[in-house]
Image (cartoon, rainbow, N blue to C red; front, side, top):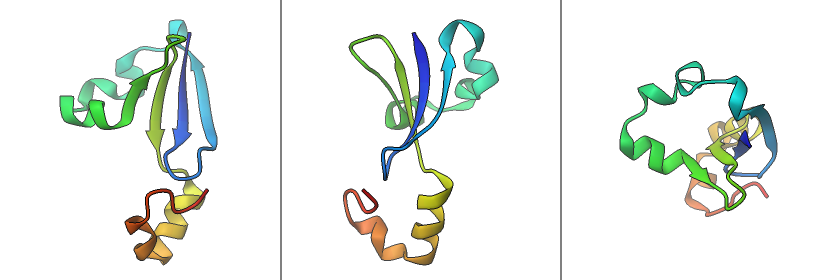
Length: 76
């Protein structure tokens, strides 16, 4: 099983780790509140963990065009 980081805006895969080789503490998950965990971390039926974050490209686009944050999937 793996831990996969994907962009919540464009869906691009940012990084992937073998779950057996990293700990939640190494990834910083232990410092998240239960609400934050529920918001950004999900499990697929395959057992893989998906962490939804914003990639650098989308973050820059959102910083330059804040109105894009009002759209459900602004940068597909």
